[in-house]
Length: 141
Image 1 (spheres, helix red, strand yellow):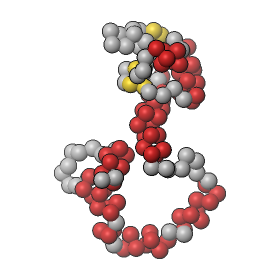
Image 2 (tube, rainbow, N blue to C red):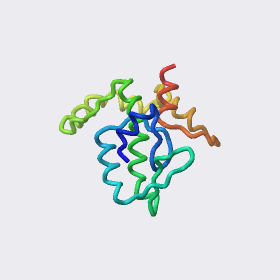
Image 3 (cartoon, rainbow, N blue to C red):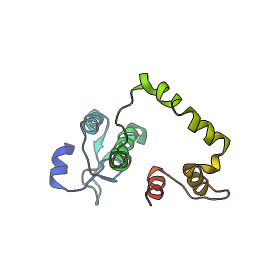
Image 4 (cartoon, rainbow, N blue to C red):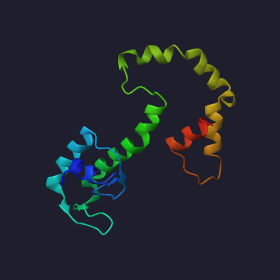
């Protein structure tokens, strides 16, 4: 099965391994899929005729992690104009330029809107799980 050809047939492709929706087929994801072809076999399911199986989920876990990143986290990053690459050579200088602000946060964390959001998300005794989407949804209003 070629992921790109299936995607052309179906607007929302299901992952051939975890059966979750996959709405993108980046070059990295396609390469990962092709690398998995020799380690998996066709195992159609009623709701996912392109389903594949492997001797262990660990064989395809990174593939599923990658498509979740591309479908969930990456759109949030793009929407918020987060950098897509980091110049690590300039990172130390960038962080140290915020030294005064960071020291103020350490001394009075309650003054930080991010600290207060995190505290609300992880308040004592809470079983609420938080991920990047929950945090950014709260931050946008």
